[in-house]
Length: 401
Image (cartoon, rainbow, N blue to C red; front, side, top):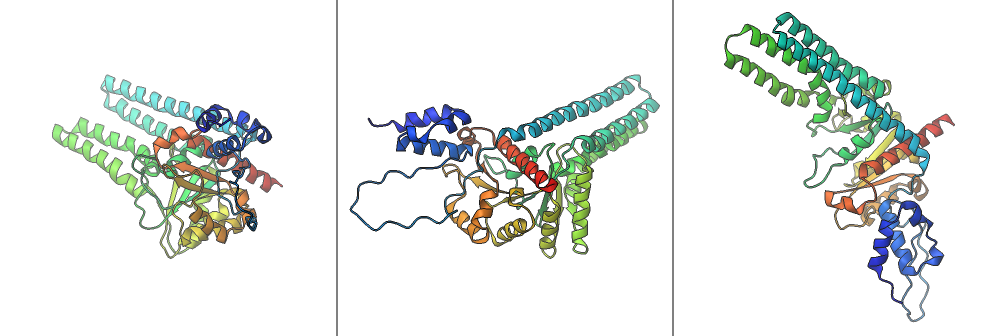
């Protein structure tokens, strides 16, 4: 009886991971086993992919067996439930952090509102001071309590969100939330990160508010007061992020500067709610900075979408400094492409990384377009979050041993 491949694919797609993995290959036809393998690869599960039955052909010399590790580089194998406690704890801290932060700002806003209603200048200044204290508590001390303190270095040239899709940093920043703090190194072509600069924007916001209220109370010209307010807000939201959207690393003592910034991450001194640490250095000190950061970071995430000699050097250096389980490879998949690292990119990687080492390195494949999300069994952020959590657990276990 001829098998309807489309029906089989629909049935397998509706199965849970456990049911799919529970199917016995011996009970399936070759076509069904191929469908199962394709569905498992799409979800990032590791199963043996059968070779399709060959058509009857004249007898010929047998083809040589493929070399070990020469197959496609797929997503990481199924991650077990051992990471669930770590992920659940991170989600609880995210929830508590958000609630406490919202409570601090709500209380500060109510005090300010009460001061304005009373029309008391002294009370208003006191309310501004109270608001400033609330901002300091919310943006400096709460991150110190709740933020993940594992430095997670991600190496990829910065790009804005691609049209019709999400950038890799969008997935990584959110996947690391309360598990670790992302750290990235960029060259001098990099402009700034608005998210990284928002911590300073929020810290300076009460100061702009104080200047506005003082001007409103002392100046008679409404146009001047409005001009001061507009100028302050433009400076705050446009100029401050450009200046504080990254940290500058000088060529002299670059390695020590990187060590100092990573030590701040480990101590929790990274202000802001969603901020990552962005280091910008020159081409002269780039390799020194990257190597030092790889030495001190807990995990290294390397995006190999745009493979180059610099990316290959980053991979070689990373596996020479860290266990392969602590080095995560990422690749962007275009619509219509297979969910695997392209053969040309995989071939270049194998020229520099041994097959045994490569097999232990986690791989994260992420979509280039939001239309691809329906092809995935779970959101990319959740997938990467589980990969990061397992890599952190394995690194911690290796360090403890």
